[in-house]
Image 1 (tube, helix red, strand yellow):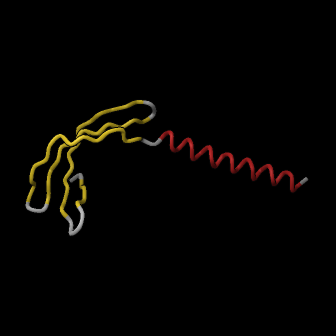
Image 2 (cartoon, helix red, strand yellow):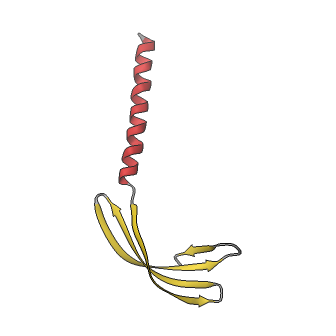
Image 3 (tube, rainbow, N blue to C red):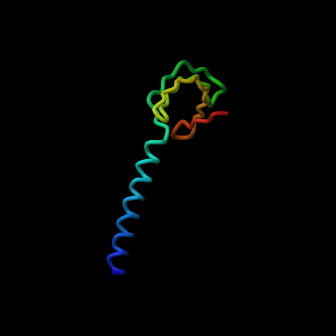
Length: 82
């Protein structure tokens, strides 16, 4: 009886772990679209860009403008919101 109960408990836990992962994925914000509005030189190693971002969360989709600073690294550009 203990082995059967343990097996059922293990199966229930595995099911709930999967359900938690599905729920977390459904609740996480999803990036729908990202559009560059415009950029200008901020200094010799950086650009200041205005971006329109579209995100869906909890079945609601919102668009909002944001500003990002992109810094030229040695091999890549890095984004910063400062």
